[in-house]
Image (cartoon, rainbow, N blue to C red):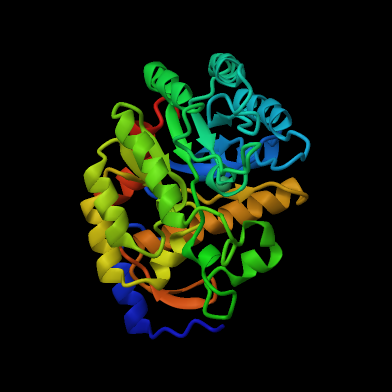
Amino acid sequence: MKIAMTRREMLAGLAASPFLRGKAADPPFERIDTHIHLNRTAPEILAGFRQTRWRALTICDSRAIGDQPPDLDEQVRGAIKLHRESKGLIAWATSFDARPFERPDFTETTIAGLKEWFKEGAIAVKIWKNIGMAIRSKSGAYLMPDNPALLPIYEMMQKQDKTLLAHMAEPDGAWLPLDSTNPEVGYYSKHPEWYQYGRKGAPKKEEILAARDRVIAKYPKLRVVGCHLGSNESDLPALAKRLDNYPNFAVDMAARVRYLAAGDHKAVRQFLNRYQDRITYGTDTVWRTQTEQQVLHSVQTAHDRDWNFFARSDEMNYHGHMTQGLALPEKLLRKIFYDNPVRWFPGIV
Ligand SMILES: [Zn+2]
């Protein structure tokens, strides 16, 4: 799609943005991507991040479901290696395999394992959507995030001052008919295992989020960062209510900036302004089979695109849709891209 813009519009955009003087569009502060999955050695990516003054939090997920082989240890080894190589540029978050939650020694073993990884520098622990949507007890009941077997883990994290990253539930699209009006039609066509529409006996999205909220309420000193706008990507008023109710709750925008770009910009700007201390930025970049160069290119493209959306005022093509930049003030940008990550993930810098 051709970006048509008059010279006058372009100049208006330039005038409104403090970050477009000359060629350098970069801000006078470092930026932090709080949600990537690059759990292996990555010299070229590190060099690229250094050049553009980005830091990041790389996250390990225990994604296995059913009797799939465990997939966490390899990610953890890679994350530790990357963290060390980066000399602190990349912080890391660990996770745990929740499938054996009914074993009598589950809680104790899990806590002992997490403490070992904290010694290796892990600053946060991620729980993933397989809790609430896939892992089940022997009797068939879904494991929910507030299951008693998990509570001592959160309690230990609160004591150890670690952050809980919670990717709970999915976008609304997982519970909507799979047609062209579904904004997630691409993803769920390829990943039917996470498509919940009409699935009998599966917890509803609100039930999963309510169980997460009970954890947030039960441990008021535990910092909880809800990934992907806390799965309230299409309902900022609902998210606002949660942020009002739970001062220990924040959200990352990983892979959901497109919802903000497509949404009502007046409401989005108000939301970002009101909750300016509770939001971090992330891309959700995943390194699968691409080359390192390709990953670097894709993460830098996302960084530039999203930065332009938040910082600039001109019209731009965001994921194939024309949209206008939000032109947030520098104070807000600095919070979202640096101060909030530092505050919500102690140890990230
Ligand atoms: Zn992710």
